[in-house]
Amino acid sequence: MEAKLGFILLDRNEIIIYVYQKVFDKKWAQACSHTYELVPYYYKEIISSFEIRDFLIKIILSHQSIPNIEWHLFGRQIEERMFNEVTLGFNFPCLLLNLSEEQKLLCKGLLFETIKLFSES
Image (cartoon, rainbow, N blue to C red):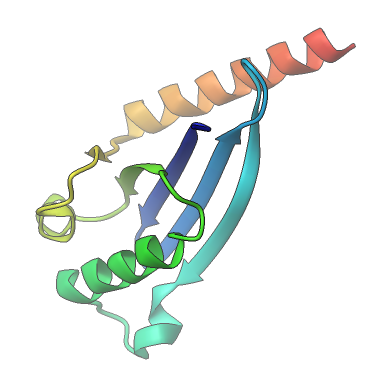
């Protein structure tokens, strides 16, 4: 079975999805990506945690055409209370990022991209 990882970033009123698929032993390729702005869907400035959760469930179900995705959800610029309400009951890792964690992940991404560039040349 091919390994697949799905990353959901809940960033205020925006949801960003990236799905990666393992293509060779240690190589991963982006299978798909989507960005959803929640405000146009609900036509209001303040969106409830229930509406965000409902939208996330629809997104996850819409990706069932790519079976066996291991999902991970990250939140940024969202209140902790709301994040906890949104992620309640999800059976995959959910992490609310603080500034330090965001910077650490950004640096790791830059490191791996730099290593990839040097190994290809």
